[in-house]
Length: 185
Image 1: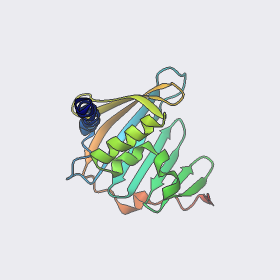
Image 2: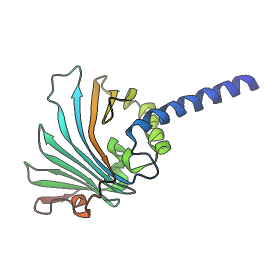
Image 3: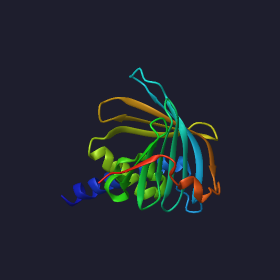
């Protein structure tokens, strides 16, 4: 029985270690790197949908901005207290309490360390939100992430033009105050 327990423990930690090691290719989890910017393109491998293209800006420990350029323009801004989702075409920004929806935003992994990111991804997998998560380096400046979502649709995200220590200006983490603000409870 003891041998079986040791085997299961080793299997668990080996799987966890693999996940964390595979995340290292993003290099955002290096303890010396606290901010960065990258381009992303998400494609849907079985669905006939237009690719989503945009940029991710982050400044640890609590600031994140995800812009979408195509197929529509939007912004998601996290400042540690609130999360703002702006639809540029509707000229509207929704404000959410940070703690209420932070787990719904996959890009939040850029505000954590490697072990926490791995834990968050494993939690998403255990809850059935993602499966078959794979991450790999494609050349020096590109990372490919493949996964299957909760509706059994495979997706691919390509991260490129990755720049660390980008010295992001504080104002890029402010929501567009010229939009109509709707506070969500």
